[in-house]
Amino acid sequence: MKTFQLEGSLRETLGKKATKVVRKEESIPCVLYGMGENIHFLVTASAVRKLVYSPDIFGVELTINGKMHNAVVKDLQFHPVSDKVLHLDFLEVNTAKPIVMEVPVKLEGLAEGVKAGGKLTQEMRKLKVKATYDKIPEVLTIDVTELGLGKTIQVGALSFEGLEVLSAAMNVVASVKLTRAAKGAAAKAK
Image (cartoon, rainbow, N blue to C red; front, top):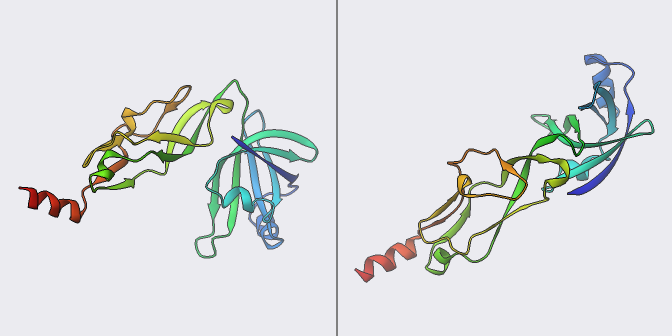
């Protein structure tokens, strides 16, 4: 997993009024959950831009007032109109306790159904997995070369070493759909 360095400073005051002041100064209020007491801090909006607006997942090396914490992004909230980041929650991690994360899915290979005239569609972009922090990969690669025309790959059929997949087993990850041209060719063949 890629790492992202982020520096923050502790928040002295909490509450609605203090949070409004923080946001007017182009900062984002954050909370670090995990080992022991929760830590309330703030970061600048420009510092987290590459962390938030990225399809990749990151392990965050978070420095708050000189003290370093290893964390992952647990939750983030956006403004409903302006799409500015309103709040970030981080979860402190270690290699002893497993965590739950959504990991991006990448399809690999040329499906048999595509060779026969079908269209490959990716239904799920991320899968929810549970593992220790050091075992979570940057991306889950799924081989689709054996996927035939009209066939699907479901979450229940997937297994990854060292990971427990938590997404619903019946969810479809990828499928090869029959196109109009393939349907026409099949009708002419009859």
